[in-house]
Length: 490
Image: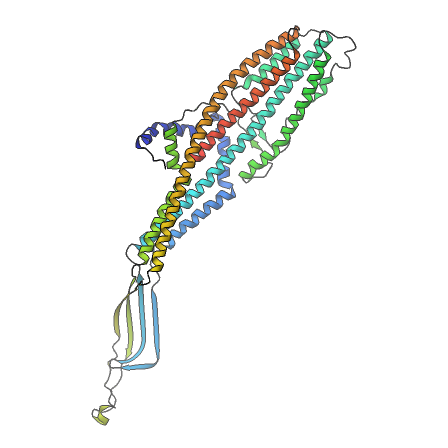
């Protein structure tokens, strides 16, 4: 099991400050930060699973008030149906009051054990809440990713439509200069959001919105072209129309994927399935430097699962102490009160050998202090209780070691993935810039018949793939950061 190094914790002081800034202000612009924060708060307040876990913690707190107190005193009362004649008088009633006390330290140990179990329940609640927050973020990012894919495909559809007009004009032998400029403008417009996953900033509901543009214009001019043609090819126009049809179909499929995501997101918030979801305006790619060793130490210290197992381990230790104390004697303190009534003298002295004489009784009531002590001589039960607690503690220690090993692997994988996404973002942004320049040059060359139409379609598709890959990589970054926050706990 990995031990926390003091120098690592010292270095975490600088890392911790940066981490606090990261937790509350990473990636998403500050102006749109409150949208996701609001959803997280709503989920924490309204999700039934999290609320149920918190009520379990509240119930565990009430257990603390149940232990750590003395047992109820015992009151015994007896009445003689026929007075018992004694030298003190006639005894009518006997009353006893007894209070039992456990061995020294038992009550404090019981209360400590219940408190530790309640603390473990709280850490279990934190674990569930952290998982919920991660699910909210992950679903929110998936919705954002879907929105960007739809926007990227709509931008690509606009590029294809302008390229179609260029191909038609070229086929008809018209002036292609203005059409080529329109294609270049569409390419630049589509590339304006490189480095971020730009959304519409509008709410997303369960219904369809932003439907793909109709391809009715795809056949514009086709019937009026006539038999004559310019330097273009009719096959270029037809191939573009095929791609436009395919892209419109893909957009409709993306639209169909939206309602299930919205419904899943709202279910986490315990809201109506079609409640509108507000999106951020954009999600920027960021570079985050992590001190892996200090970060791992902070996870092993603050992770709620680790803290829950630590609390349970201490509780099992207290249970072993309780088992030992159970084997100690219990003692009781009490008082016995006897009620007598006066009795007159009867008989004569010396008569019948004195057997018929009964002296008078004063009837004075009697008070008798009492002490009682239990004798736990049957030791097998107490030894078994102590051994049970020790075995549970050993099992708990093994579980904690397994969790720490798992967390160590997770931290290494997450930090590796984040660094990889940073490299991929940098590469994709360069590829997008170069591909955009290449496409603009090829479109201009196509207008002057010095570029292959097939190559233009290939480069145009590569540009779309790069943009979608960039968006997916940025979402992967956000998902990685969400996993980091889940491991650290709140």
